[in-house]
Image (cartoon, rainbow, N blue to C red; front, side):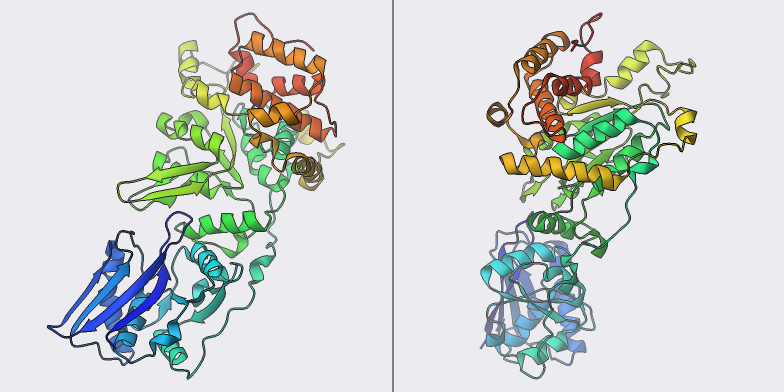
Length: 512
């Protein structure tokens, strides 16, 4: 037998298409070639595989060895094909029975001594293998991660010799048992009780958590904007099974890979304001998930929002609406989910002290206008809540008479409001479209009239109108009211501070 075919997969976004590793050992001058639209790392597998076979006591075939990773038009990357190529050469040389690998997918990068090392992106491959009914041979470093996939039969290998003994029936590879990651790992998160004062901002954070809304905090340095943002993920309920697997699959594709303490935890991503557009939205020569995808089902925190480059901020507009991002390159096209909660923070002016009662701000009006003008109207329109965070009074810092509510207390109210939304519409209020709002958002006459006045006086766009209505629906859910009333709309309008500031000069917010 001179031809052997084994199975593996390559990540392409969250998909993992099947790859056939076809190995032909023929006569002719000695040569070793690997074909199939390969990245440099895959091309280098020739040297790793040759050395690994020699150091494991196997003689490399003397003739021409051709490895085809099919389909040929599917880009291949990484060292995950090393094990399949090495085993394929041994099977094609009739040193191993090829039938032992029927319906089995092989993964792992080989060291020169034959050790099988882990690789990124195993979980998406394991999910696809489970659906196809295939078993998997994976590195020990990836075994627990692969076992998260429902229906996957995961065999663990630490060395090429282990795989060879398994194929000849000398010693079966160990079967990875049900993953211990099925339950969330308890990690202490920042407590909302640490935030002193800021009753309005705390209320806005609760509303944002209950309805899945985006929020922008505006206030001077040291007022607690970052503290509030860091506590949002603690108010959100744990991920359900489908969310946890989807989130873990994205993390599996990242450079760090999936970590044990991340399982079932809501992501919290806080990129620096010097981040590039590609690092935020994803991409590169071989598309990788960006920060917005790594924050999927969790929180994306952008501190010092106006300091981000304009092109970086503008790439957020479409994902905020659609919940996914498509990355297109000449040789690649990948789509990643990006359903995140945006929490942003900014100073009121470049020095941060505009409006300070002590008059510490020295920024001229044109500089303040230029600073705020870095945020485009279309982006601000897509942020549900614009909340002012004032400086904390010393009395609030030192007072211990009334302790602020802790995260657990607020999280219980958030969970009840979310359960109401899921029972009513199977999604959070922030994800309702215009047609669903018209059907599901019952609003009384006084609230409708108030919302109409807000539209006229503040010059709200149609998008902002719908966002105010979604926020009002969430406020009503927190109040356990089936009908959206005037007080709910009034609070929702009050929570769009930048719309109130940009309204016609001399016009105040609509009265209740």
